[in-house]
Length: 539
Image (tube, rainbow, N blue to C red):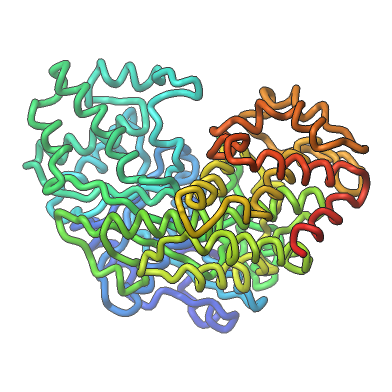
């Protein structure tokens, strides 16, 4: 059994082994898409293959669509060359369900795969042709938040961006420069409307994409490399829109245990490819069953009825509320609490942490008791039901190969949003008091305890990478196992506790600093002290 068009000809063999196959005429779909493409997606990674491509497949199966997707990769061309095209743009989705079962689906909705390479005349000409089509309604992105940045980590403009600003749209080298060049092609073809939709997991993602695109449009019109009307075209939401979205679906790296299941079915050529850019990509994607995609409904050239496959269309304010609900209360804070505390307690799988009654109680208190009172209900999703699904279905899923060590990465960048926003909401409310928060300051202390790199059994472990690791080192190096008074720890850590960039607020101004150092003193007493402090926090 091979994942190719020829390999699927013996449908019975696949279906007998439990695989769902495309139920439409794929050849006819591919032809229709190439003639009149409606959806181009940049970022040919796992979440796109598991979510957006599968949604389009479901609609194709029901006859609700007659065309599929155009997938474009602009960062790592080998994904297309070594994975997509050898498999005829087919993908295998393995849905890992919370009840321990799996669902296997051959996804065939990707009609065409393209490479965003301005130096490759064939590839780039095809993309220009697609962007000139009247039929193109939406251009979507999953390129990570970093993909939209025009500057490096120090805030300096990237050399490729500087060069593209000066040279114009003919042959840009930067990712966004190439995208804007294709938009300029669409402008020259008659100022045709289109929606530019970031589906990346970052706040106000539509604005992030607009700012990057607009910077190029302004630079090119200013230096005469593009017609003056191009910048106006980009800024006219009746022609080019930049909707906000909120996406949520866990798609971990392809797992060896899943690969083994597929091999036992008789599938061949399943080995992952590790590209020269160190991208790990396989013919299959493993993902959880739960998924949410909330989209601001701004599509100047119309759109297909994607609500039929579960996408939620609404206004910008509601997208914002859903995003804050998820990131500040109902999912991300619970993940971070499990990550840093789980590492200290020796856990190596997030799902196993949900078998630890103390950790379950911790995240229940953070979610239901401390977070939920300040959540603004977005209406389109119920916050309590969202937390229920997170704690009862998603995190305990035994098939999801996610680790607290991975989630603990960059924690200093996560704390101000994931917990600081809740603290600030308490500060604004007359009926709530910051003093009532118990488990959020416990998590702050657990993170500081985590930075010591010594677990609760007294064993050393490697802390996950963090951009503030070096600057915080002089402080956490002074934290040793043994008896410390909260006052002593406060003297060491006061500059950190005051840092609103880390915690979202200056903890010394609201009195939470003393709670944090008291919890930290408890956790540093010796082996077993973290567990004892946790049990005290949840009592």
